Length: 72
Image (cartoon, rainbow, N blue to C red):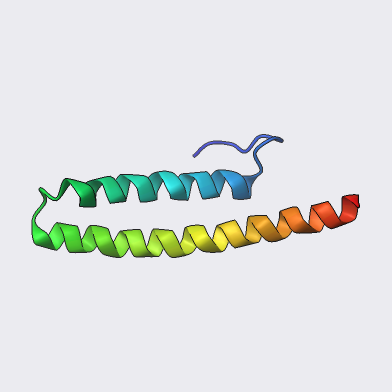
């Protein structure tokens, strides 16, 4: 796992990791060549990853909003 830099806090890095995993899973689904059981499993993984990514994005947005309020 990569270390977070000052420019990329751990939450942002985790969000990027989620997006990478989600993109890979969507690519598996788009290929459509896997057996149905594998496609169903990939779809389920995509739903979980999407929900987690949305949650992380909301957390990051809330943090950005708090910082913006402190700066004004």
